[in-house]
Length: 141
Image (cartoon, rainbow, N blue to C red):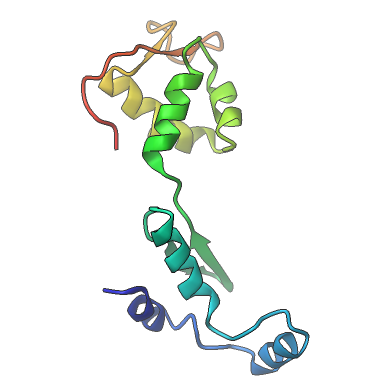
């Protein structure tokens, strides 16, 4: 299924306010209605990224673009060559959701043995740090 089919299924290329589209076109804020989303999909494909997710929440439209997971994990493991707090790791990766970060990165890396806790008997300790082990039991996806 190509991106144009997905776009037509979601009706994202259909303007809701034709007067606004005309005004934006006249002011040269947009060059052509409906051309942006296909360009985003093309750019992600060219960059080797996963396909973006399109969603409509309330009256808002959201495009979720994914990072290159492997590069991100390699960076995180390199950053954790010395013990780091979760907040240091989140800041270094320019993220902000602690819960999502733990579920997406820390938990899989702990399970794979690539990362270890410095205080394993107290996983919620404020003194908790994480350090890369250099071992690779399995690939993290």
